[in-house]
Image: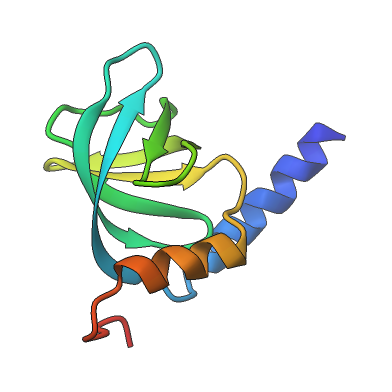
Length: 114
């Protein structure tokens, strides 16, 4: 049964890649499994994941936790790393309400995501 849930998530995550990914700049902390946390900046966000800065190489499949100011840590899995940028898929889709609250908090007056 867990496999079916994971399949549904994978389908939704891929479909979301065609959806709106909002460009923004959020200072945060990122910690890979078994590692120490480090400062990062989230550069885009969707309900299925994000991309951000990561000076050290992060390998696909690595579990990690993103901590945004004022929120609980969000678990995800590294999908790609390229030239100090990392792409992460959330373990569970982000609630649209939480997503919208993050956007309202961090998206500036000028909205470049349209």
